[in-house]
Amino acid sequence: MRATRNLFLLALLAGAMPARGHEAGERAIGTIERVTPEAIVLRAPDGHELVFALSAATRFERGGKDVARDDARAGDRAVVRAKAAGGRMEATRVKLGPAAPAR
Image (cartoon, rainbow, N blue to C red; front, side, top):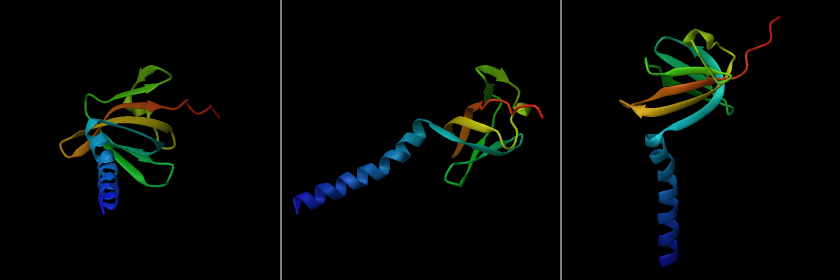
């Protein structure tokens, strides 16, 4: 009985850990679906969409250098660092993959 209870408590704690990690901040990797003045939407490798709010404090980077928000385009690979803010995930930094070769 005690072993079953301990196993149940362990499973309960393991399920709560990702939620606690969200409060501290998250990192997401994917392909940009779209960028608006208010949000950036990524398509994760498993196919689901991740939406991050943008603010004046959000920084965009490509190749280690800061770039403008307009440099982020649909189809770009990106890593988004975000934090919980006001019941949503807010992007703090968006690292863009290498620029696509000129055609």
